[in-house]
Length: 211
Length: 314
Image 1: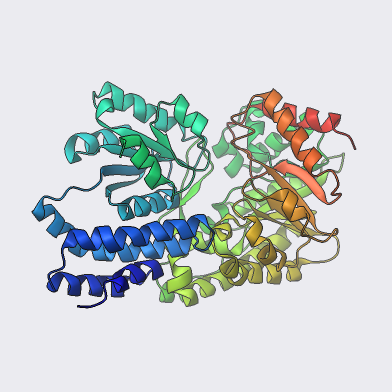
Image 2 (image 1 turned 30 degrees about the vertical axis):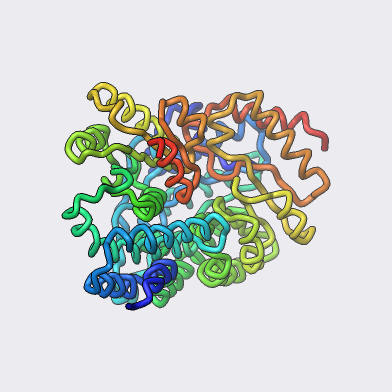
């Protein structure tokens, strides 16, 4: 059987074409989809995160690795859904209302997906109502918000309050991040977790849900 | 030398939208701060969307926020090759040039410093910032085509600031701080070096601002050949001062949000005192904010900063 480590290495190198081809071949050969995720893809993204934290990888390398992982996941996800396998968590992520910056949000989404979470990317300029809809309609158990501007930070508190008013606050853990955000601010607005880096978002998510 | 124009809104009652569209409103906001703090310098506002808008990018603007670029003007190599290079004065670049002309007329003759974007950060806005990051590895040819055009425009724009009376220009290159040192060297420093050489005359100062750069980026930053650098909170400024020659000036790096927006005045004073103490033996350090101080920063914070400066040992 082909060396499945080549899937791990393809993700590490940001080679989407090889990642997809290796996954396709492995599935055709009868390898369990969950094995590919748990033993090759998630460890690859964890290694990407480690390299990013150690300044061996930078934003371009992280984004390319995420793209390679996504390419492989596209083949696996339908099989996992059909088998009833559950993701580690289901995350609705977005940059808050009034804010159009997406690079931090994209990095966190990539790391969470690599960490085994199903990520529903709501994009930018996301209203509280859109986050609430994701919780009610998509079974989301984590709401992750990003803001890059001090003028849009208040939308995080507005969203937390809206989740409360909609009666769904207790169903989700709220994670926040972005350049102007601090742990102190996260505590003030009642968020459950904060990470100052994309790579740290996975451990913040795990800690928040008690995993 | 904190980068502060927008906090002047609290003194003039203008909106952010007024500052970025009306040179008189921008002049008034900066003058209000200059008179309050008796700064030896004045600045045009930092606005990272102006140059991309001049190229044709769509922008999103509101009354209370600095505009931001939306969408992607360029998505492939053919579009990059056909993209026309604008001229200084096109669209809102005229606002910043005129603001500098008015600041030049101030009777107490402060140093006048303009603001522009750096070549890689401008290129990133033309193709989409996230997309640009990947393209540095997957489509470097396209990135270099846009870098050439960005550098051509920025050279002309910096010259226009000079002709308008600026003594120097802050060139903001934050997107380059997200790259590896090697990529920063190839995709930012090399082009800034060209721009710097084109505008150098022994009197005019091009100040490279990079609020995302870390200590490991310092060698790549120095390759620009410039002599003045302005860094943000991620930079270990004390270690950086230990690595640069004495004729290279480093500025920074109090977090504009974490310090000027979120801390009470007494803690801001403490942060200033600590930073000055840790850099005391370096004559080539200028204390500053790590980036543009946002419009939401309370004036009390800036008051505390300048009071702490007055009390600091010479």
